[in-house]
Image 1 (cartoon, rainbow, N blue to C red):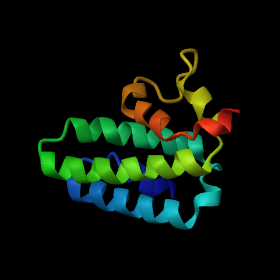
Image 2: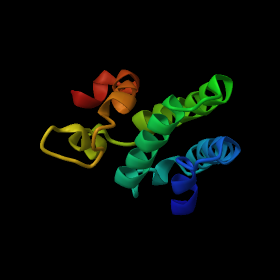
Image 3: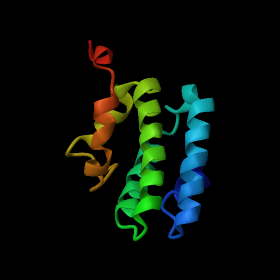
Length: 115
């Protein structure tokens, strides 16, 4: 799992694309276990989204971003927000400067989980 997360930021686009597809499949089949390494997973996703933004191939970047957004939907659905929202606090550096890339996870969080 860790190697696949690292490949999300690989310099070759086909490798990033395959890693994003595999991450989606693993997230679907292992949804209850997403919480275990959520900090590392979210940090890797943030880095990969930053790399995708700087990609020269726009069509490939969109495919990768779509897969990653689907994974973020699953994280928002199956992981308790109390687990990952502290990663976005200004005093934490877990996601570093990638908070813009991950801000879309907030739109997938079910508001009833806060009540």
